[in-house]
Length: 137
Image (cartoon, rainbow, N blue to C red; front, side, top):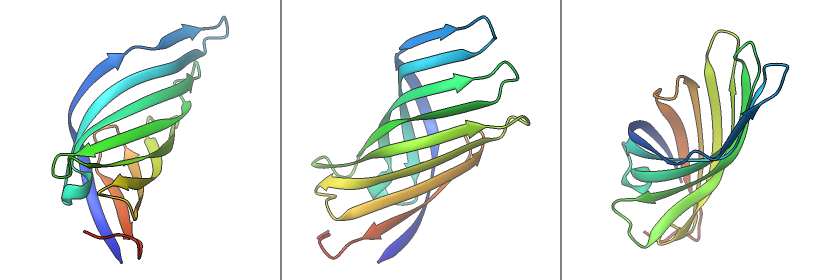
């Protein structure tokens, strides 16, 4: 079973600024930057606090490429969580594109998640939760 879902960030704070440095060519490098974001969603299985560990390379023209990991602890499922990876880019017009994939653990075992965002960090994330035959709500 596949369920279309939408989520968006409604709260945010920095946990660890990580390591950020630049080179003489004007590039900026981020490693291990940790942020917590709160996702409000139309499906309780993805609504809650998410920890993002980010790595990013920002060019002098402000375009960027990044990647990292994420783990979401849905409010309604204290014994379950979703975790995965993401890739991100920002183009010359400032448009951010993010792709996320992950899977469920604990009471959310048997779920997979795939999501994408296009716009800004605060844009809607359109995703799909796939309920595998092993999922038992």
